[in-house]
Picture 1 (tube, rainbow, N blue to C red):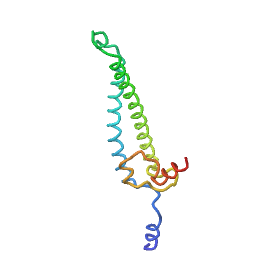
Picture 2: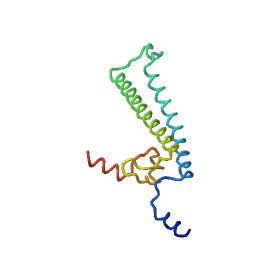
Picture 3: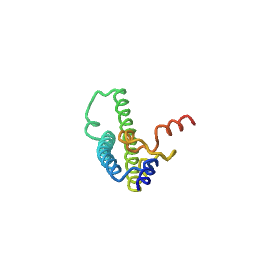
Picture 4: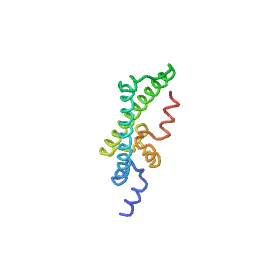
Amino acid sequence: MEEMLKNEAQVEKTRYSDEELAEFKAIILEKLEAAKAEYKTLRENVSRSSSNDIEDTSPSFKTVEDDGANQLSKEEASQLAQRQYKFIQNLEAALVRIENKTYGVCRVTGKLIPKERLRLVPHATLTVEAKEMMSKGK
């Protein structure tokens, strides 16, 4: 029995425990809720700036620069919304990996992604080393 425990300790861990996965799931759900709220706000800003409300018909002294600034901020809000939507998709994919018990495993090396990295970037699918290897290969 003692020998068996010693051998288990020497074997590198290949996945996170159910308790660890539950911790990550809580982090992801919290980030997901915040991300969805931010996405909704960004989408509202984009649709509000494209609607013809009373501001468009009221007499004003708008200059071409003002219109350009409005357009830029609408484009920026749209880009931010797209980025936020992708972030939401990545978080939802991470939840699926938790359910499959494959969460936290690097898709290149097969090693566990360190907990510290997953707490900061809960949708990470690569270890820092794998990410660096991939960027050098490009």
